[in-house]
Image (cartoon, rainbow, N blue to C red):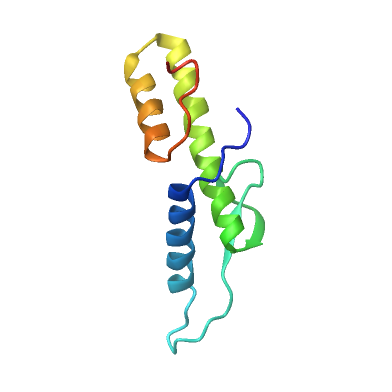
Length: 106
């Protein structure tokens, strides 16, 4: 599928994620000690494979990878059993993030 575009809605989700991470990284005294994500660079699966400083770009990539994995999973499930709920889920995900609708969904 390739990397999805960064839409306004994806940017908003990334900003919200970054805000939440920054809140979690504050010490009891309000100081900030740095914020890091543990994730597999392949596609945003949370693991202990790599520690990456949390930045807005990292949060954006993380969200895009999650969405892309969901779309690939929905496509695979649709191909396996032709259950239309997977097509509807993929369509909904595209509409939610302002992505174009893939041909297999149409």
